[in-house]
Length: 134
View 1 (cartoon, rainbow, N blue to C red):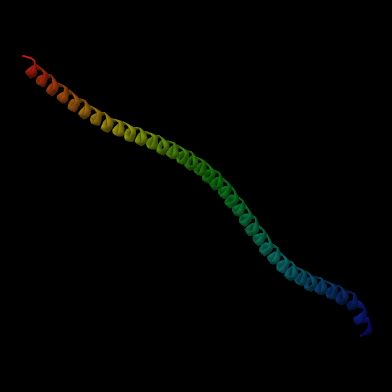
View 2: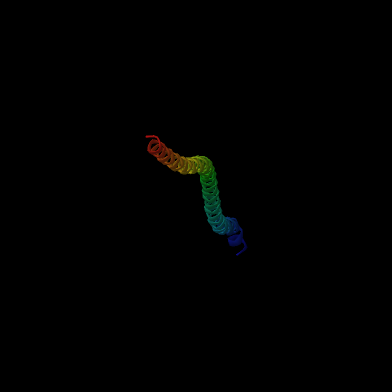
């Protein structure tokens, strides 16, 4: 039996080494699979973060564009307000001019009435003088 063990001990040792290698390989593959799964998850998370950052940069660009547009609109509104104030000032000046013309027209009408009264008085005096001087 001793001879049998000596002959087969090398083979049994080799078989045990092979079994150990197969078991170790299986364990390494299992761990490698777990690591690969974790790496895949990590890569997906990194890609998601990258997409989020790119989206945030897009939002920042949109906000900057919106800010520029709002500044342009504000400047346009300021110009329109200045134009409105200018038109309003012009309108007020025109109203004042019309009021002045109206007042002057009333005064002219008053003076015309006075002149007509004076003229009527003068004619009346002439008629009286003409009647007195035969």
